[in-house]
Image 1: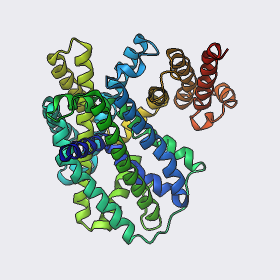
Image 2: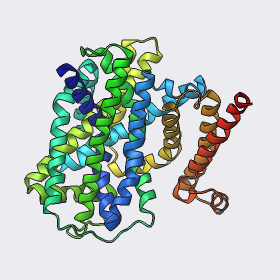
Image 3: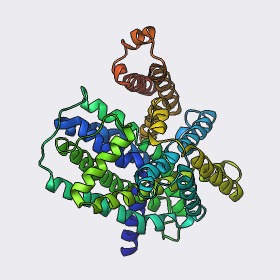
Image 4: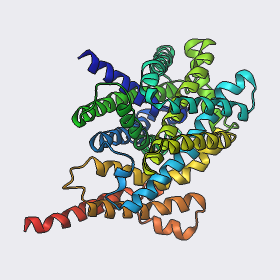
Length: 434
């Protein structure tokens, strides 16, 4: 029983840490700050895309216990191959370098004044060392790094709320629930779920934990997902609440870039909570949170291409090196630039990922290959206007999307996808009922 508890705690901590990166730490306080008295509604929306959907993704992994390819193969093997490659390219090109950019701008440069090139080079060299020793990932992250991260986060939140005057600023969002949902996209947690879920499964196969049977691993991954999700919920809600309740005490310079606004707000909250020591705590916290996420992304990408190409260890090493080199190159950009580049990509890929996650946790009698194909095609078609509207909005497109419910909130794909699922499911089941 003790061994099982130890395995559960280590896996839960590792899963939490692989999820919790730069965006997860920086986005919630500013979201709370801008939401003011409506922070609870914003928090609910944020939880949907940053906690609920990702944890459902982990539950889907627990059920499938395969690779990311298994998520989309019911649509078609070709689609799944293209989707997997796209997801992993996005992962190593955007969220992974973003962790290095955030670490440099918030933790390293203010203290040492080093160049982005030096920071990202050392950063990804260390990431590579961890990835190449991937059999120890769960233990290293789950036993040592994550508990430290969680303790510091809870200290900032608890002390911050204790000393707060509970006075919020003016709300900046017209639709707080929708704003929270869309901001949750920026955490990349749904994409993270399908990437790091595979890392957890392969790490369990590598580790010397006494988890071998399918049902044992399924139970371990499922329970770890719930615990990690609870941890994410508490941290996110706490950070949003702290940001909201310090709204009247801290002034954010709107002339600064969005990333520096977020960083300065979190730094001011940390200093108010923990004194000047809070600045050091924040630097260490951001560095560790970003680092563990980068390790998970690079390891997951290398695992996938290794499996795709005859289980070659050489492919694993080469992919890890390429991912780290790309991280160094893209890491030269500032955090905000990477976020801006990510938005149109997320508007296209996130809806498809969300629907694949939801379909993969449904019973097979409901989520048939026909249902998969129909729902994913409709989701893709109705996501394209959001991307075009973001890149170059024009009047004709706005008139067209005006007829689609929720389209003005970049959620025009939701209702068509749900309706398609209902119609195809009924049509599929009709002959059996006759």
